[in-house]
Length: 184
Image 1: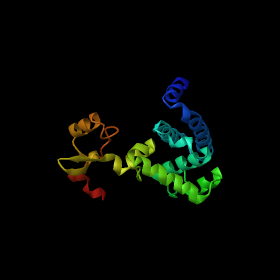
Image 2 (image 1 turned 120 degrees about the horizontal axis):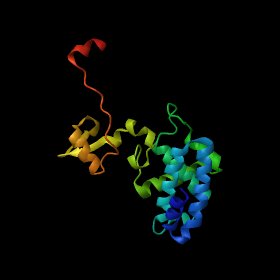
Image 3 (image 1 turned 45 degrees about the vertical axis):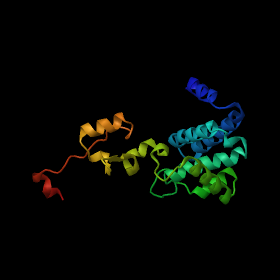
Image 4 (image 1 turned 90 degrees about the vertical axis):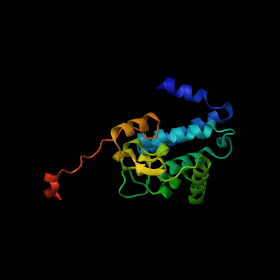
């Protein structure tokens, strides 16, 4: 894993490298204490994307504010503030934990979302463990119609996977048979 990190660090322009390392240290610690490794990985990936952007916005502003904005963005995409989710946390609690004002944390998150056109349930920033539950992951366009790939023939699913339109071949529920109707 150390080789992977150093390869990623080498691809970051020098001016943004120290900000990237500081922000990742903060988001990793926050995710370890309050969330989980999946959140930490997505936060590292988003910080890496910010660091590689030319010019990198990370070179201006406080690393703490950027770290808060990154965690808030990933939490927002994954509905972290929904009580039915595990882990669960209010987005304003992220601001408090980083010692950042609510409007500052929300503003930084909004800036990041606009910069990369990130939307709720964005497949690129969704927790991998919840991909099955994210309908945005499975919506593909075929002949001008948007369809749920989970309900397509296996051959079409395989082609969608080959083209990178879906992350994997989903397990399909078996259709009800006539003699199963009594189970309703």
